[in-house]
Image (cartoon, rainbow, N blue to C red; front, side):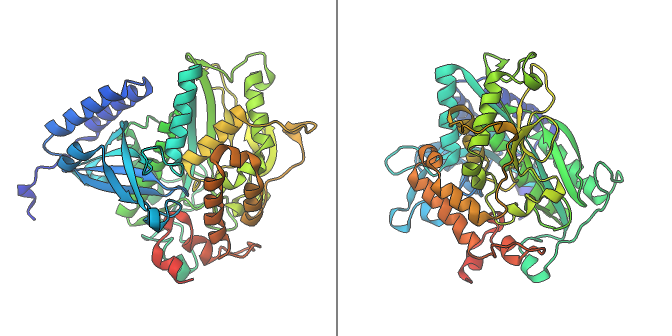
Length: 476
């Protein structure tokens, strides 16, 4: 069709950033949901150049799903959006398939048309069960309910920021073709902070950073990482649900930008043996009335007693939540001590082999950094398990808990066993979700050798949850 007959929304990057920062401010200020709803519906009604609204939701394993609704249909039907839950792995069984999507109108994004297509806006949704209650397998809904409850009851704001590493490989669909090629091809060998200004990796980072900026991420810094063709693009702190949403958007936009350039952005934790893997260092803190509850200028490492208790609970339940933070077979290759692996169940201000680190901070930035999180983890489940454990979890009576000689498992089979046996996980997720998540992970584990060896196996990549497709599973 000729472009002359189309009049779809395509805003400049400056206009996008202004709109997204305004929406971000409304969200962080907790503007009443009914006011946000009224404003968004009016905008969609008045803006004739929008053709569709993309609603995003996440399954139990962390895959991001996108559904496009015609704008006019959505305006009239947003309270009754149904979909087939049995087609989503980890959701309902075929005999009880109907689920509904609710819209979180505060989580609304305007997107660059040259990356996402013109005439569309994005909004995050939450999954609703047949009886109208929040669906227990929707971890975004679980995280939001927990965060809202703490704010309502204690005026606590849960904050998070993530440092998400990834690889840029030559060619499109490099993960999907790995079982044929048996290798990933680097597009750069510069290394940490070192790359020519117009190198392909630098061009990709610059482009992705521009998209993030336009979407209101409020960028901080970006650079090549230690391994060849590895990157990291950092952005600002935020309320925990918004932070988890940004993880999903970060990976989505990186993949799309890479694809547009003829490359593949991969968030496999350890796609290449012999070089550093990719992590998702998760920085968390809690504020009350604008005051950082982790800060104490007189505390050990300037961390408050409350903050150290939070860390102690994380260390106590490290084995229980390990599968949540490292949910793929490949992620256990990253827990290799030869490559700065954060596999030691201890806390340290300096040792990067520690599962938990206490970075240098001040009254505003003091935080806890959970370093063992892999970039393919479900961000909502990860955030919920970290905060719920740090706030409400048990504390083990282990001498010198913060420096004890304990290690995370080096294979997913052991992590699954720890997860299934955990009373704490049953308490916070419920036995049903605990069992479903374990079953999904076991299905992947069964297709891979327990002993990982020195070569990345095709099965680790083929059945990696980010590139799942039904035909591959049906071949086994």
